[in-house]
Image: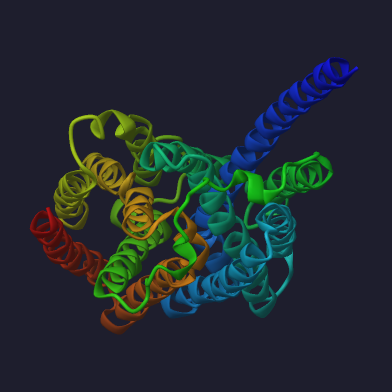
Length: 406
């Protein structure tokens, strides 16, 4: 009788493991799909900037305020995500973030500049809920190969970023964004509902098991944590500034806003995705610090081409190099943080994600401000050069510190 009960118990346990495995795969697919659309939602601001400017007759400074609006929402969403993470509710946070992105994108069709500002706040709130939540879930579920797993996840974000430019170019009618936003909002709502109704494992079971109590590991009292956060501040600022302003910059250099598939912005995001796709291969031969430093040098070469360009071929080549260089920097920096302070520490990494959002706000606004101040967008884009030089200096210091520890 005892043997029978044991056999039945083993059978039930095996069935539960298989069910959880299938559920986990379904959840993983849904989260990656939402991450794809979050890539579109994050960078679409740069693609619709010229159309919104024409619709409301805005100057560069007024256009520049759209970025802080989105990032205000993103900061708020990141803070809420931190609280939800402590409650073990990162999966619902991802679904709610998808709903909010859908609502914010739909609101872009409203009829005043102020309401469009509000739309970007709502969209940013969804981004702030979704991106940190899914990044942390992915990292905790892949403790042994965190850099590769995060690069693969962010590969889907990059696919969404690639899709944003041609999607806008070939669906915008005049200055109307109705078709564009419908094609994004509808699947986001469907995916968010699917995440909520899909049976899911408890988040406690997703965390890596460890005998050490990492909850008491000091983080934000150490210079290393703030150095990594400062790196995130500047790099996310560069990445967002480049993706956000490159379309407008290219239109002015080329003197045309004609819709076409192969644009500098498309090449930027295409090579951004290619870089994330091939990044895991580089980690077999180079450590994280060397990969980041190499990427920063590639970005600097790309910026030199972009800012000296007078025609589309040079712009495209520069955009491609910048996209390739920046592709794996963010997920690798997050992986570096988790390895330094432990995987459990990611649920206390709110300042790291906030730093990136604040950097994105500062750099994108400063580009618009300097462009308006000097009457030339190229002048504003030099903010990106300063950003990369600062990143090279910080990365050199971080790499030197790691060599000393060894």
